[in-house]
Length: 189
Image (cartoon, rainbow, N blue to C red; front, side):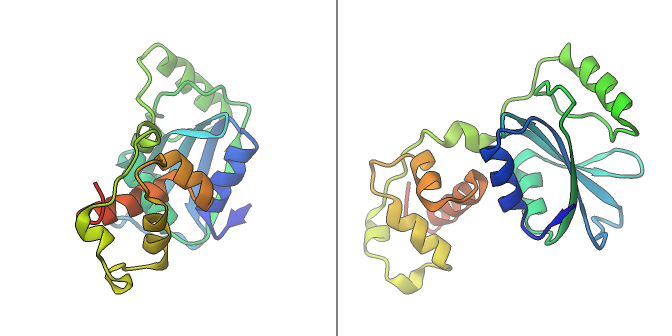
């Protein structure tokens, strides 16, 4: 299967509370530092627990978690498949699986290790962003995009990031990225 929008796919899997490993690759294989890559998302009840971008040749991790999610959302159309039968452990996958059996064995081995913490945005969802004085006085032209204006409009000192995500129907990683951009501009804290 393929999709032109990874964010939509992740929302769909979140809504349907899918668990397992989601594998993604570019339809027209783009190269990262001259290497073929594959993205791997570990999902538990629709929530991304970990994400990696790996070199397909040797399994080397090229990007992890937030950086990997952001990079993958910028790659355009992606081919994907989901391994739903795989029992998720919360641990990062150490190598590209060669088969379903190899993946199951690897996850069983990882189950003995401490699981990695969830993506940073999952921890941040309870935070309440606040507007700054310069943010309140910023002209509309100060915002780089419509998305920045939408997110900023919902920052009222009472709403959590989770509520803003829900109101905008956007992936949490996208909202956190926009909030970070607004924070760098000095519009919110």
